Image (cartoon, rainbow, N blue to C red; front, top):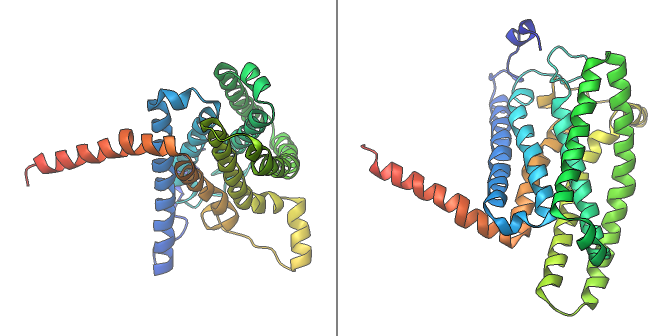
Length: 302
């Protein structure tokens, strides 16, 4: 971004009315909660060796990292008068869309991982070691950064074509793979796992499948509106509705706010749906931090 464009930036909404103040506080709270919740889950997984040994938690680390970046960037795109377009002077050079794409990719990969683990447990244990899982995660992050680099180094038309084609593929993958795998995983969790004898392993598989099902469901609810509203789909919606919604900036656009809220919902679902993660979070992250803050406040001279 150029210095001239940065100097002309102002708040997305002037703080001249009660509604604008509430919107400003909502944006600050959303960005802060995304960073706090995802950082808490991220640190909890790093502190627990047992969690790090499971592949599903490696994908959680990936989603938490991308959502932390989304939360940090929302202080810019969510508070200031910014339109993050490909040719906009206040653009983020496709970095904010990249973080959302990485969250999408991590959830999709985690869903495929759970399906493979439950449907073919013996093959899964031989094929998908933790090192290979890390390689998969690094590969799609590297591919994402290469895609952004090529888009920024080329012309605006080339960037539009690359991201337009990528968005088309993401729509296809979202509808066919995510929804299809969700149905298949639900059938497996509902019928196949119930036939196995009661054991800790069966309960772990079932809880992990149900967790990824809920995470994907919330992800689809928050992401599909902006995917369906883009470009040609937007034209169809405008034709049938008779009007189209146009926002001044991303901070006042509900189609951009909704997927950003997913960054706070996902770690909450992780915490509520995974008891080992929740126990680590309470005993090794939140409780020690609260105790240190309480001790420092009591020892501080008043």
